[in-house]
Amino acid sequence: MNVKFLSDAQLVRNYISGEESALSILINRHQQRLYGFIFSKVYDRDATEDIFQDTFIKVIRTLKKGKYNEQGKFLPWVMRIAHNLIIDYFRKNKRMPKFKNNGDFDVFSVLSDGSSNAEHKIIQGQITNHLRLLLEELPQDQKDVIKMRLYQDMSFKEISDNTGVSINTALGRMRYGLINLRKMIDKHNINLIND
Image (tube, rainbow, N blue to C red):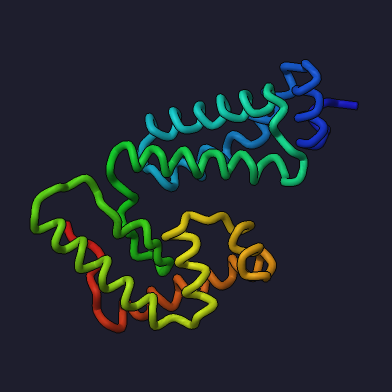
């Protein structure tokens, strides 16, 4: 059977058992999607290349240590690693992605962009206060999920375990909560961009 037709899970098993070429097939298979995902967050080719490479370095280390568990699918696992590295990249550079008015509201977009002047800090404080107040207006189930995710840095699996609902329900509550926040921001005419 042609190795290109093997499942991700089989390729992972082959790689773990010493078949180095299995990893390059996996990388080639998911390269475009992963690269696109990273670039859509950082908008910088060099940073995207670095994060892409760091992602697979982490993948290789985890596989070599035998710490990969077959519970999840390979691609979502790799995407999670990339997502965490993207967050590390922004933390290191003390900035978060700029707010884009595309209908989706991203709370991370209102966090620090590295500027440290007093006026900026006052504005950031006001934005944070506005967001906290608006958050309190959300239905309790949406508010709980958003707080657990953003303020306690919990995974959707942890949120699901904590609230006794499925991961999909937790994701849905997060999505509706962010949509409702976006509507309230528009309604109250709150400016989240303070360039």
